Image (cartoon, rainbow, N blue to C red; front, side, top):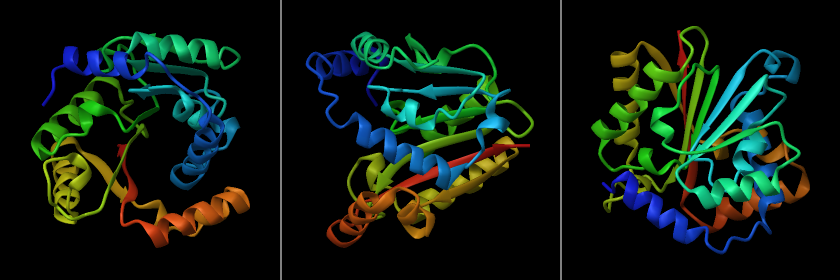
Length: 225
């Protein structure tokens, strides 16, 4: 497992020269995932607080923002955060460069969509890290945390992305047992709304992914209380 200092160095180098050519497409994709996973209407979000961990270039944060009372997005990379502030200056989002595992406050929604510190092949490490955020930041009644990644369910290799179905079942059961939460593992490609909530281009893209690759996006949805 890389240290936070090593991760920061990797991402600072990655974001030295960044391109946001695909940001609009990524925003649309995550707005679709928001509908698939939550579909809270904007009026119900007006009194909620949203925290995005490991926001990167910010498109995922923007895609999940649906009129929340306050939105905070955190990333280790100062260059990524500077880019977010410039690119999405019109958004009512607080962009913060810092340790995403040490954010103060409680939030009704927390997302970690490809967050590196959760992309670990060690189930215990994953459960410990997620448990830390649940205790520290997730509101105790009705708070929702969503962790996103992808896998081919092969269980081979040494990456989080190669987790097997058994791994995901273990993670679900242990989170529920150890943290008194309700957990659902969601594969959007198995849901009708994944194909028909983003227009024709989305339908074509999803069908192409379904046919050409085994890799599947998945989300672990954690509900407190």
